Image (cartoon, rainbow, N blue to C red; front, top):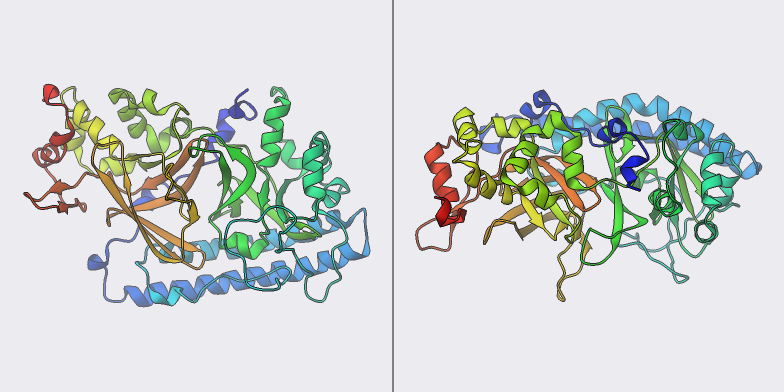
Length: 496
């Protein structure tokens, strides 16, 4: 049974929300086009956004402390009280998220201003002893990053499993977890820390009444996808873009890798995988922390399925993939992960009517195929803050470091790579391809890789004479003839 069978396609399509053309058209332009006051405007937006976050975290923290005091005093109703209190705080803070999100969008368009260097995001939850842990989560009994006690509160006296199993808000989740002894043992163990994104009973009511019951194997995968390996209190979630779960993805690399969750700040507040809203935060146990969510988190479909589910944004891309035969090629999990640099419908429109008419003509399809191949990065799965590399003895997966990160990755187009730059300051990340095309929507989590939505169609560079140099296209007007010149070296001679 496929994961997508658990929920109707309409629900899955909401899992990857893309900005409208109007929003994309308003993305900040390049530095040399900006007015002289752009730095001051961005700095002011940054300060307003930080103020909004501080206000939000003040409300959430105060309410979480109240919830924690109740949690220590009682037993059976501990999580219930925490859910009620934290849910109220999350709803109150939604207006702050709305204001802050607008500011965040403006500073994500900046090019690495050094005033971001010192912003690491707010800290909440139990203080950690020793150096902060930013690397991969630890496993096993020697795990030293245990959650400690909230300030001015007694120590937690229940594991995350006990909190869930005794709550009136998570009876359905507890019933499902109890079907798997090994999962119960994991969530009851204090040998490691875990973060649970716990769907409430109301979340299960969103499942259609006549939906087929998933197999036991699929159900365990769904439950594992709600558990992040590591300690992620709300402040850390807020400055994290993706996080590894207990679900191992078989098609993300040459060997199983943790399937990831994506966290986004939008008009609805803080969400997981674009659609599941976090409604309660920082319910601490002796072995981790629980956040409540209002929708189940389903393991994602493959890249092409996501493209198919979003015709409003990717109908041109899907048509192009279909006409060139690449749709069938990519619509398989017989590969080791990958990254799709996905141009939206608006990105294709920016090429102009003449180039589009040529590319989608019978004669132009071979050029269109070469152009699309330049948007597919096979085997390397590049998230905004993590990197699953292609199989190689001298390469290891790693988190994207803070500051500026650059990588050249080979594409499906023979002998052509894309240059990707990632600016990471605090919890805010900006990505560019070939120093030109912005990634306007980051980290579309997929079963077999990741989708990074780009603001423009990416045209391969052309070599400058005999020099080992390349001239990148940066959005200037381009004729059909120039496009053909750039793509002809990659079109089979018999097709010309």
